[in-house]
Length: 381
Image 1 (cartoon, rainbow, N blue to C red):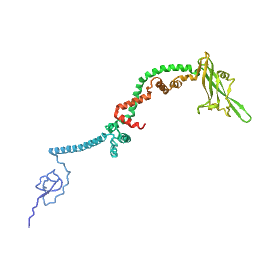
Image 2 (image 1 turned 90 degrees about the vertical axis):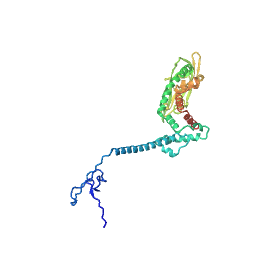
Image 3 (image 1 turned 135 degrees about the vertical axis):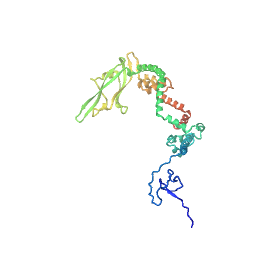
Image 4 (image 1 turned 180 degrees about the vertical axis):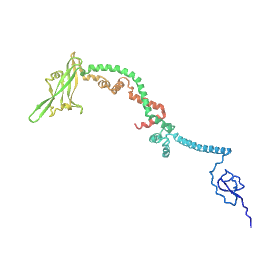
């Protein structure tokens, strides 16, 4: 019978595993010596309680290896993150550095939706640029413009704050620009104003119309007949005679009432007093409402002064039309038109000056992008 070689073993008091007696250190827990039991082997041994596992102090060499491993591992992760960022940046830069005349795929546009939404925002304009430039003699001129360059330019010209800033600068400069024109126009305007006053017949007579109704009662119905009388004033002294066209005028329809107009001389108006008022021929109403729908309007055609001078409304036709329009309605628009007609045809209104100032600023920002957009817009005007 072959004899078996038996290995003397003992139980580790720390973790409870059986280990050869020749082992000074338990291969399972490695942190305590497996000491043999002092009790007799013939007596049953109590099951030892499992003590908490204690971590063996790490040697300096092990700590160094762990630290180096962590550093290397962290460096690898950092390198991956940086590499991904650099790759995305380079990829984005490649797209933005492409010529504006090279179309982008929908995938490229969608990929930059977050980082560069302008690529989608301006895509219709980019398409229009390519449609109107590619294949023309100007293609080589504008091929150097990149997406990044055009986007920066479009963002600039669409910036409301920048536009407001430029408008403020332009209006400040316009004050100095317009001073010379204002001075020249003031002198010309004064001359024509004096001429207008002397040759405007309405400056020599003023009429104030008063209205009333004459009521005619009949056995069947009541009729109201509109009547009026006149007060006369002479701003520049008494006159010899006048010729005035007047009548019922509808502001709503901007026309005279048929059958309610006439031309009177000075003597006719002098007879039309409160005690001797006049009626409108053929005008009657069943309600006193004529003067709710019409007003009395008059136009002085001419006057004869006491010295024999004859002033006619046609005299003002000698005044340049732009100046006459300004004298009769002194708005800024009419003033600008008069300055252009009588002072300098190259004169710019404030609105024109501001628009020109901003336009020049946009051109100065990027002349090539400015010209490209101008070329595209030419066909749209």
